[in-house]
Image 1 (cartoon, rainbow, N blue to C red):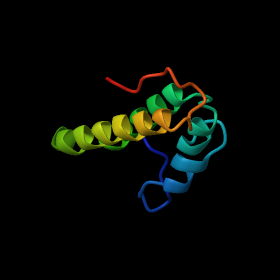
Image 2: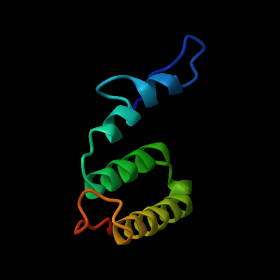
Image 3: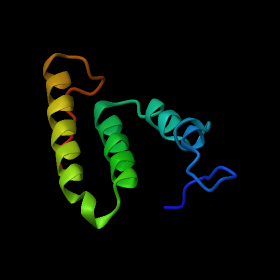
Length: 87
């Protein structure tokens, strides 16, 4: 993935996260269900931690997402209580 950059060559994180229609936050805002929100979360995490050395942190984030969305479904805080965030 190629990131938007600042004039000095560093990543423009404001654009990556907030650009309307394509930024990570607007992307998550359009999810609509727990399953889709979980998919968005994992897609973002997979995009941010794409290096070979990121395998352990990816596994941790994937486990955290499964636990977070499972608990939210159990407490009735998801729009789609039958959805699954398991990969």
